[in-house]
Length: 165
Image (tube, rainbow, N blue to C red; front, side, top):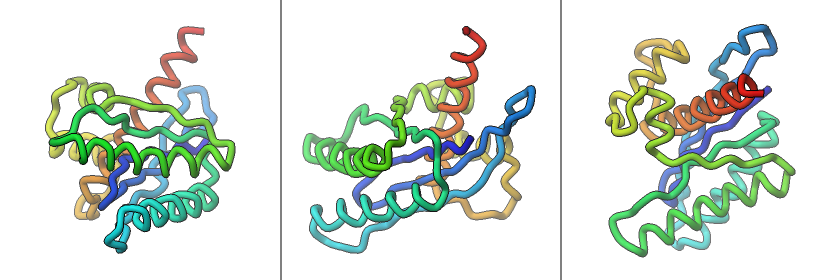
């Protein structure tokens, strides 16, 4: 099963693709990561670029589920609105392809990745690289690392729900 984690943003949207392998332990494997950096200046055109690129990404990897980082706070109201619109573009792209979307707060993501909800971005990146066995020296942009952490959080949440059943 392919899971796509997304860290949305209007200037940079990170993505991480993971595979839950069908074996007794349900092991997790790294597939891909990257960022989408819209070039347009106007917000409406950046949102269109995010939507189109996300749609292409979902068609390329065929995720069974998409996990998106939820908005929790922003420096100001305008930033929060713009972030919400980027999230909307991602969610719409998944929805139009009938891919279920799950949302996680930054605290949930950090707790799943590092065991501590207030971990720093560098700590999250280091844990993600170690857990997913990303080769040292491989450049993983912070937005992509955050997206991989969102995907990891979703995989962990899925596993716990399955165990509870």
